[in-house]
Amino acid sequence: MRTTPFAAIRSLFSITDEQAMWRVQNEDDETAFAQLVRRWEGPIRQLCGRMTGDVHRGEDLAQEAFARVFARRKEFRLDGRFSTWLWRIALNLCYDELRRRRRRPEMMADDAIHDSAEAIDSLDSLAADDPPPDKTLMGQESGEMVRQMLMRLPENYRTVLVMRHYENLKFREIAEVLDIPEGTVKSRMAEALSQIGLLLKPMIAEDNRNISKPTQKPHQSLVL
Amino acid sequence: MNHPTREEWMSYLYDELTGEEHADLAAHLAVCPECNANVRSWRGLKHDLDAWQLPARTTRKSWNRPIVRWAAAAAIILIAGFGIGRLSASRAANVEQVRAALEPSLRKELRQELSQLLRQQLDQSSTTTLAAAGTQTRDMLGDFVRAYEQNRADDNRAVYAALARLDSERMADSTALKRDLDTVAVYSEAGLRQTQRQLVSLANNTGSSGNPSDLPPN
Image (cartoon, rainbow over all chains, first blue to last red; front, top):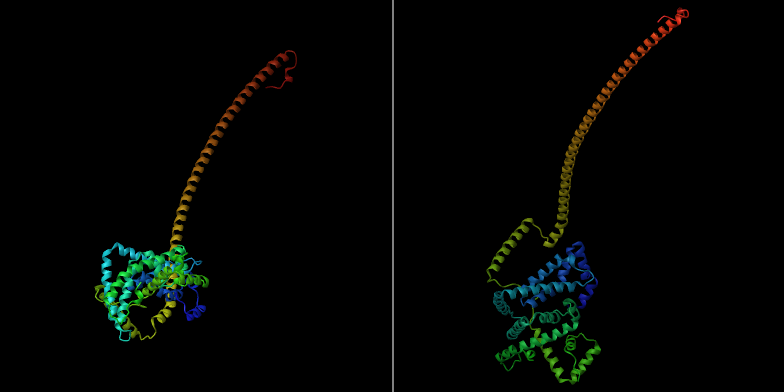
C-alpha cells in the first residue's frame, strides 16, 4: 500500500491492524472491524478485480473476504501480520472463483459479453472535461488490452504481477503471503513481464497499424 | 561480462535495492546494451500495465440482466419503504446513529430475555428434579418399610418357633423328671419296706434274746 505523509501521521494516532484484530477477536468489536474494512477495502477490492479481471466480481469477492475474516477471526494468530492473513484470504477466494470459471466454460462466454458491455459502458461515460476523446479512447482500449492479456497469464505469474505492480507490495511481502522464497517471487515477476510482453506485442503492432495518423504518436510506450 | 540476474533487475525496476546495489546495476546498464535493451523493454511494459485502471468504486450498469432488474425493483421498494418509515418516524438521525443508539438497548433486552429464559429453565428443571427425587424417595421408603415388616414377621415366627420348641422341651424334661422322681419314690418306698422287714426280722431275732419292746414299732 502507498503511504502518504498524512497517512503516516494519522497512523501514529490510530491503532494498528493487529490491535484492531485483537479487539475483533476477543471482544467482537464492530468498530474495530469497521476500521479494518475501511483501511483494507480498497486494496482488497483492487486485488480481486485484477485477479478475476472483473471489477464487479472483485467487489463481491472483497466483501466475501471481509465476511470470511470476521467468521474466522478466532483463527487469526496475533503473532502474525493481519495484512498477510487478509491477502491470503482474498487470494484464496480469487483462486476459488477462477476454478469455478474453469469448471463452467459457459460462464466465460457470459463474462465476455459482460466485459464487452462494461467496455461499452466505460466508453459511453466519457465526459467533456476529460482528456481529448481519441486519447481517452486509446487509453481505454489499451487498458482493456492489458486486462485481457493479464487474464491469459498463468495464475501464479498473475498473482505476483498484480501484487507487485498494482498493489505495490514488496517482493519480501509477496513471498510472505505466498509462503515461497523471495527469489522465486522475483523470477516469477520477470517471467510474468516477459510473457505479458510477448502477449502484448502482436496486439500493439496491430493497434499501431490501425492508428496511422502522422501527427500522433499513439502507444509510443507500448512499442517494445 | 557478468550480467546481473533477472531477479536483480526486478529489484532494480521496482526500487528495492540499496543505494550501492542500485548504483552498481546502473553502471552495468551504461556499458551493456543487452541488459539496457531488456530494462527498457521492462520499463515500457510497466508503463503499459498502468493503462489498466480500475475505478475507485463501480456503479453497475448491467441493467439488461433480468436478475438485476428484479434486484433493482426490490431495492427501490425497500428504499421507498425505508424512506416512508423514516419520514413517519420523523427521525433525522442516520443509520449509524440509530444503530449505535439501538444497540445497547437491544443488547440489554436480549440479555434480560436470555437471563429470564435461563431462570425459567432452571426453575423448571429444579422442580422436575425435586418431584422426581420425592417420588423416588417415597418408593424407596415403601420398599424399606415392606422389607422391614417382612423381616420382623420372619423374626417373630422364628422366635415363636424357638419358644414353642423350648416349651415342648421343658415339658418333656418335666415329664422325665417326674418319672424319675416317681421311680426314686418307688425305689425309696421299696427300700424302706425292705429295711423295715429287715428290721422286723432283726427285731424278731433279737426278741428271742432280749426285750423286743426296745425297738420302735414300724
